[in-house]
Image (tube, rainbow over all chains, first blue to last red):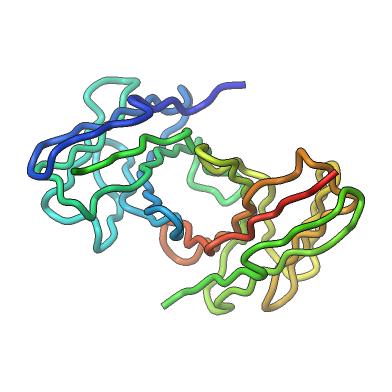
Length: 115
Length: 109
């Protein structure tokens, strides 16, 4: 069964450094998302992306965050200058269509630790 | 603000002991109610989507139901491999899911 893959599984970085989290969505999917989960808290929406542009973003997704689909298979999340509070599990997700009966499929996440 | 609330936070069951998990949601504007399973260190795994009150869906030992203000995930005769965190999420008028905090289920042999 096709799946969303994320790399790396764990990233440790120092405060102020830039990080890029990488995702390969399921190949025939058109809608892409990033969510995050701080340890012990809810899964939170960050951003949605369709047709090479951001369709929606949350208050968390400020100017320090950006997303890109550099080629036909990868989808990346960049954090320009990491803060301690960015430490979380970051999940990439994708779905085939906008309809409700097209469920969101999640990857297994990248655990980001900012020291 | 749209909200999704789950209870209990944690549930310990003996193998074979059936039970239900609860998800309360903001009623206005709900377009779909989702259930996911999350294993430790993994991403959420899709289980069910429910659209309208009275709807039910089943998969193995799990059955999800939807009323006008709540959803239930019924677990019949659970096994240790059903141990996981079960997440409920609402889809409202935007393209994002709003998740509850989850119910952590432990099933003991």
